Amino acid sequence: MTTVAVTGAHGRMGKLIIENINAAPDMGLVAAFDIVDIGAPVGMGTGTEGVAGDVAVGIAVSDAGEIDSVLARTSPDVLIDFTIADAAVRNVEAAVRNNVNLVVGTTGLEPYQEEIAGLIADRVSAVIAPNFSVGVNLFWKLLADVVSYIGDWDIEVIEAHHRNKKDAPSGTAMHAAAVMSAVLGGRELVHGREGLSPRGDEIGIHAVRGGDIIGDHTVLFAGDGERIEIKHQAHSRQAFAGGAIRAARWVVDAPGGVHSMDEVLGLSQPIFYKKIE
View 1 (cartoon, rainbow, N blue to C red):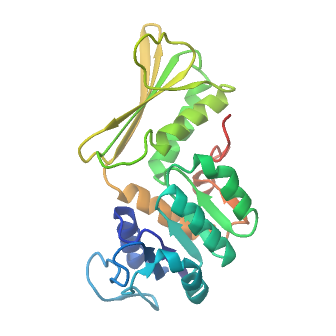
View 2 (view 1 turned 60 degrees about the vertical axis):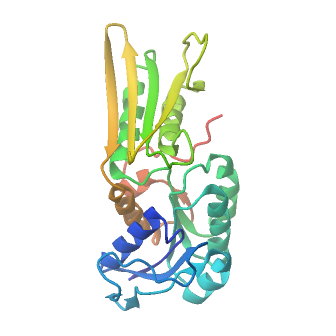
View 3 (view 1 turned 45 degrees about the vertical axis):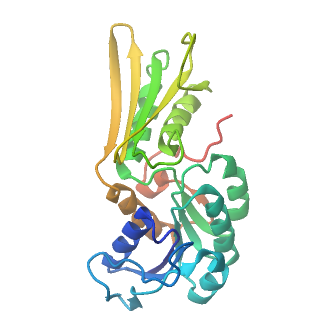
């Protein structure tokens, strides 16, 4: 049995991940953290009592400020983090101190990449990705393959999310642009356009926010007389939760260090976590 702790337990992703853990016969929830409603029972999805294997799932949410002591007491195999960037760094620090492996899906971590990699080193194993959807990771792989053939075409990345998403552009869109830029030897990334802005060889990135859109990502390759669009659309957040659970199973037997979803999925030529200058 893989024992799991979850941060952001009262958030949409946290609740869904907990439901997935509770439904998995080979996983058990041993701790959950948040900064609100401390002491409230974690969401059960289909009920309020029950067990997953021999681990009770009807546990109370712990204060995120006490993560060190709770991890020390419960000794989970994996901590799954879907919070915000600043909190994620503190949660990574706590996990490393307590020898707990990590699955981190928090977006906006680009400024902290070197810090997080240094914290983890080879002390624990971690899967860190801006998007855990299997389809999105295949989307990135397709982009890397396609851009190598038509890198002289104009490239635009357009993403759309719900009105409450805090960061823009999305981590998924930024990673798509970084993947293509790396293949092309480094391309300037331009965020939106206004006024006089003649197009050059840049990769354009555009963010749309509205309604309850889960997540749409489109890359437009425009050539002379034709264009190609490669698109991924998330129909529900289960796409992300399912991938995170898959990563949690994989990471417990992985070597120490930071790993990508490419490795979890067995894709060749891992492309995540390369710093793009």
